[in-house]
Length: 346
Image (tube, rainbow, N blue to C red; front, side, top):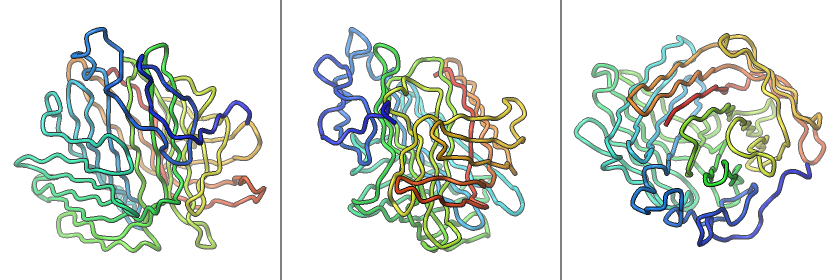
């Protein structure tokens, strides 16, 4: 794993010239996200139109997947919420495009602050607090008035490790990303007449926090899961490829009870265009051999002039094995998660 560089010293994300001060991966977000130093355009007034920022929260309960996102793509904001019932397969998603991201608030860094958006149709608020993260969503008109409301608390003590990377994308672009898996979740999700009270011993949340300057035409694969082993330990999976220069830092890892076990290169073996076939994942060190058997496909498309994206997000069950840093082999069975293919012009 010599190609993977672990960063251990705090500092700024960008130097005075707008270039990455460090490249690598971290167990905690050590770098200050000083996006005001970005120098993609000569005229600083245009920088904001290329900077992309988002907070994507997801929660796996025994019965449902719930997700809410607040994103600012520079020239437009994007708000979306969706929910999947595992038993019935019912999936419903709604979103809103916000011109120039007006009304969207996103904090500078991932460890503190509030992310929010509200108008006369919806209210979304995400808070990063000492030891926890709170997710509030109230969208009365969701699904033709059925309505959805979530009040969640995700436990995230300071020692809980995350998969954090900072990588270059070409000469001027970059990506700073933090993924937190396996946060015990409590609270409630109300969807129409259906109400679920979440218990932290059976429901887990995750966060995808991203900041950076991307290529206009982009492609990536991402895999994520948060659940439990047969012995009750919390286990998570995060794999990704297809974006930027991953030679010094990729996001591939297994998470067990809040600790990241870093993997090097991981191959995604799947059939693009036939996404319901099994997805197989193996790494180059013989530490990961796992298969996702999909049971539901989510297709999300956005076609709004300069924004054109399509994602195939496959929900399914993972089964296989992984070798931890200690040498212990864990058996993974019936772990609900997802894998996706995303192509975008944004």
